[in-house]
Length: 429
Image (tube, rainbow, N blue to C red):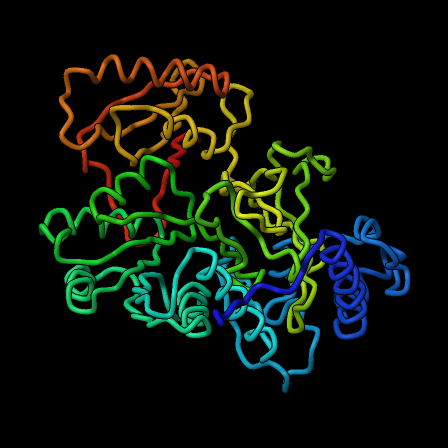
């Protein structure tokens, strides 16, 4: 019998019942185990016994990254130190990292969630997975490898960078799956193409994490590396790390593991729920996390909820790929814009590559100007640059109601990276 890491949840009512049970447990666990949460809940006038329905979630106070930084080095700790078996951390904006602690059960839960991701991507135990993300204090490498080993496939812990080694591993070990940031995936695909290795390797699937990947980038990577499918995986250190959801083989949105956490989508300004299909900030409440549970944690990540049932039949809800972060928003000529909006517009254009940069300048007239530099498609002639730029400029004006100048640059002239690509350059004072 084929092993499955999916829970035995048959109806939405089953899922909601499980969520309510988990919500009650989390609030009680945090209240009794954490001085921070007890103080915050007391200030909100909420006791654990007050949680009777899922609607009571809205009575709970929010937690932000600022709270994590102020509580450094052990924010949200809700268990004794002797129960902690690991910590991970992500970078912080004030110089202090956001540190998350894990119990043995937390690690076990994380492994199961991640194994689900490999399962719905259609992997088997015969697959070999080359893991090309960062190891160390970050959750990336540890999470991808943890899930791989729980799932039962062969892990090749390559880490990022070192193209000579990556290419040698692709040839010698014949991995069928690559896990990487989208930028690292593009770097590897272009190197495979440059070295003429496509017919000598066996990569069938690529799983992207840590940054948004547009359709053009996915298409380029699939073509150059010979992969059949690509998948998107979200990853937030505060919420275990990567592995908390994945798009299935139908690619109609990212299924997220709603039996382990509740995701609200709220307007970043009003903190009220947004309608299906509208962009909102992802706010997380964990349902089983022991070491550092989350209660209405404002992630700042932006996405849309996808309504309806996926063709795969899964009851797990779906959200769109990440559009960016609410604190990445920039204002130009009075209009609020997220880099993801530009990315979406560029994804629908022909004749260009996947790499681009957004440059913001303030000129002597006191006005702000936006220039978007986009790579020409590989092998394309420069003869059509003017027409392509004009078409993109019109699409940007229509899509975000702000004019921008588009410059078409040579293929491969914008920098590559083995981590996250920088897209926005704000040169204004």
